[in-house]
Image 1 (tube, rainbow, N blue to C red):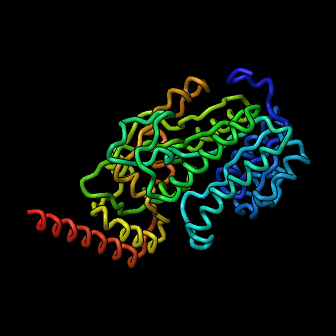
Image 2 (cartoon, rainbow, N blue to C red):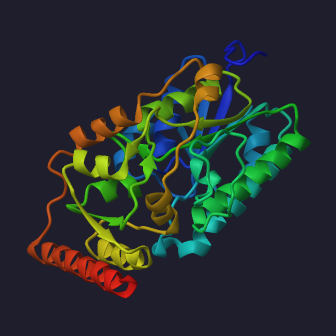
Image 3 (tube, one colour):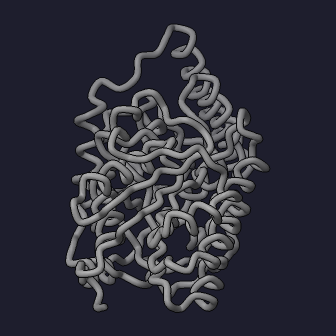
Length: 357
């Protein structure tokens, strides 16, 4: 079957991670495709209440990934879409250890089950451009063949490298299965609720002093389109998925109508702690390194093989701004904490300048 051919659209599709935003939307979209006979959503936890109606046409099974083997065999599943990844540690879910258990061990268990599934013919795996890591020696643009110059400092980036390594092993053991790996840039858009969107929703946005990295995003709707096509069509291989063009961090902050606060890189962990106390989400080394170095990927393989070009990074970010106009409302105490952050950042910069002069 040639890439893009839909004559073999799948019969039974299993989607992991349907208890969360991305998995729920992908499963619902596949369930609405008349070419697909049956969509089964798998997650050990029930979906968020706001996702329940969205999943009305999806068969939901509460199941851990280590119990997936029997399901794939008994229901003659021919396609698995693996979206059950955690991008940041959650203290309520075991922190970094729980994150690695979900991402790395969970993927190993899923691939072991997939290897034993005789009817399986397609595997689609969510990955990330974090696979390239970040380094001062990085190229200006990453292609799918670019190897990381350094192992990522952040847990999510390291997990992604492990996951892709296991998928390569699966490809060798099951060459009869079409395996698609999608390296997504950070999601953004009207519907996205991620660490990154919460970062740009803050009234005061911490940046790294002296750095203005180039960034790429992918609109959430375009990510859904690529995932849908990966299931309905055959696209073996690994693909970068991002909006063409770039935005510098300073441009993004200005367009969002926010105020940038430059801090020294070693002090950014303290900034992250303040942000958490204000309720603006979790920030780890993956995010810090992205805001220091940036990351830009080539998407020509995706555009050529899928016949689809995501909207530009600038257009995706503009959609996010329109949806979040007005941003968050902060209390007087939160505003005081943010002002203290600004003052502390100024003191850090002045102290460094005096030490170097």
